[in-house]
Length: 97
Image (tube, rainbow, N blue to C red; front, top):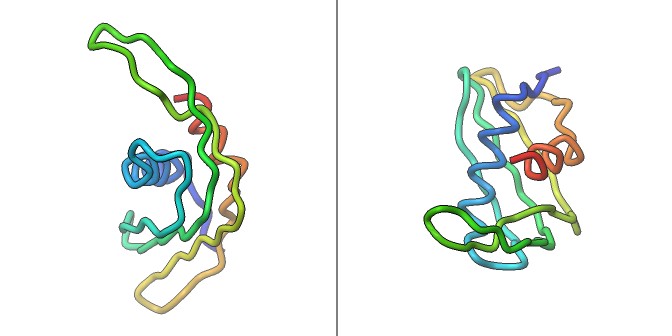
């Protein structure tokens, strides 16, 4: 089983936030590779935002994601592997960023 690291959760969160953009709903996939393992998150999520003031100006930051449906796949050179991905862990990364 592939253990999803905190660094990978950060990478997934950053990729997902970029794909979401300014939307309040996302349905699609994000993918990349890390440490020789390709990953793909396919999800439909409701996006909750909060207005925050930064030195650069105000923005509507993502503060939570509520999954409608999701799946996370990891693939090594030998094929697909089971993993211990948790959407709750991803939500915690989003909430704490």
